[in-house]
Structures are given as C-alpha cells and as structure tokens.
Image: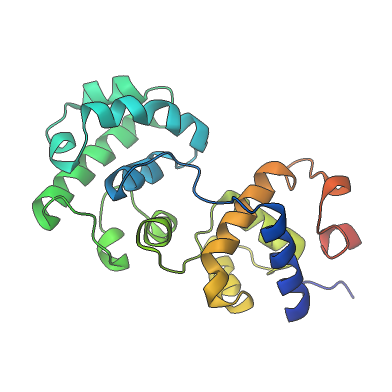
Length: 213
C-alpha cells in the first residue's frame, strides 16, 4: 500500500535538511516597512516576486504610504504596474486597500487576521504572510509552491489549500511554521518544480515519498 504521509521523525528530518539547504530563505519581496510589504504581497498574487519587485520601487516612490495611495488615480497606478499580471484589478484593489487602511486604521496595517482579510485584495494566504513576515507571528501561508511541494514530498496529503494549511499546522512544530513556509517556497522554486522536479539534485530525495513511487 502506498504511503501517503511521512512519519513525525521524517518530517523533522526534511525540515532540518531544507533549513540547511536554504539558510537564507525568507520573503523575496523587496519592502522597507509593513505598508510596502502588504501592498507587495497583494500585487504578488499569480505573479512572480521578481516581477513585483520591478514595479514597486516607482510605486512606493510615488505613493509612500496609505494616505498617498488612497487619493491616487487608477490610470496612474495602472501605468506603473502594468507589466505584472492582473494589473487592472490589482490597481483598484490597492487603492481601495489604501483608502480603507487610512479611514479605519489611521494608515496602519492592523495586526489581526480577521481585520486583514476584510481589506481589498487580501485573502487567507496574504494575511498569513503579513502576520508572519510583518509581525513575526508563526504562520504557514500556502501558495502554489507550498501546496505542491508539501503534498508531493509527503508532509501532508490534501486536495485543497485550506486543508493543506491545517494539515501542515499539525505536522510541523508551531515554532517552525514560518521557517518551513519559506523553505518550501525556495525548494519549489529551485528544485521541486511543477513540471520537471530535479530529483537527482534534491537533498531530501532519499526521504521524499514522490521518488519512492
């Protein structure tokens, strides 16, 4: 019978190896403060972090805080970020986000999950990233890399994002949630690709369930 999930000891072995392999794993979005982080994460949906970083320099130069962006014209914002995916809807979202943050929270990003997901453009994954990277909370944000890699190698065996997040919270010690989130993303980008994973180069190849079946 095919083994679907790794045992506790193997989970820790995987986490340790990934930590050693990617010691600098962290948020790849360029940002200087919580406001820039939040906007960058919203812009990164279905777009690479590299692409986002190419447009945010000018965006934040023109609109350095929520108050400035809240009065921006949609056409002006679109012109700055048009090279990233879904730039039209994202332009509207970040302007509305800025307006809501300015009006309800005095220009400050709230440190509260329920308040974050009420903001335009922010869903479960985005809120978890903001809380983890911006506020230092232990969170597991499940993006496409985390979803693919964690289910492929055997950290969990789930069919949707929410169940994957909940399963990872059970499988991974809480004090390693954020670290593991970043390690899994970096592993997905560097080796465990969607179409052609480079298993011959993989440091967890001997443990990974994908290579055993």
